[in-house]
Length: 328
Image (cartoon, rainbow, N blue to C red):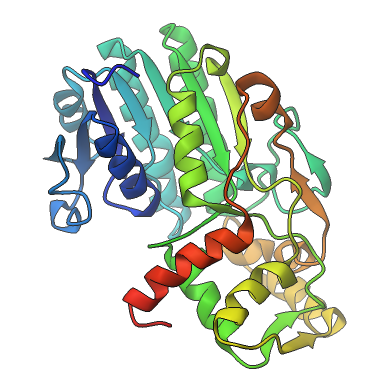
């Protein structure tokens, strides 16, 4: 990208968006961050070239005003939990608002952050971008799959170049879910888990995700394409949790038999209201013992890109942050 350009980022006050904003600032770009709550922008507020713009991505007037004069867009913001209505409003209608404003502005490239959750929880083996989206019956995967369609429809209708990235479990410094919470679980001696931990996990280090996002913003072969961003091959849950457990000096494991948990999960799923996370409880439990890899062949072959941070290195880098926040 030309460093004289202005880059627009939604979700720039969050974990992934904040890491992206720091990378863009370090690379010398002007960055405009749309922030629903500017008070949460402390991680990026004082970076060179970064401007914080108060506004809601679901309000067309805010987005149109904030986008004026920008050249490229990274749409990172999303609701990862809450009711179906809340996630539809943010993930679908918010995306519609941002991509429509970007198309009207004549943006040079629109990079949309999706998720491997759009494939659903049941698919096993090698998963490629050619596989259909089968998100199941929980709000996050359902609304993110629909958001991808919104991006494609509006961008294609307006001939706006776009790319979609589907990250897996993003971990690293400032990751509340896949670093801090997983570390707290792994710290328990022994570490409790359902089964022997031989099923596939798919942690991808945050810097790798940011790097692929930046490639998608410029590479000619990325236009109109969707790319996984995940470890290939996948490590096991035992590898992943064990890496954090080693930070606490143990490898003790407490495997809870699958047969004790799965019947209860099926009952919960059967009784749960439609379009809620609990509706997928049985699939999620079953997923913990499945073997699957989100293939990175497409990014490697079309873009010459592959993840660079090995799991052990990523956990070592995360340990520095865990120490800073008093967890380690």
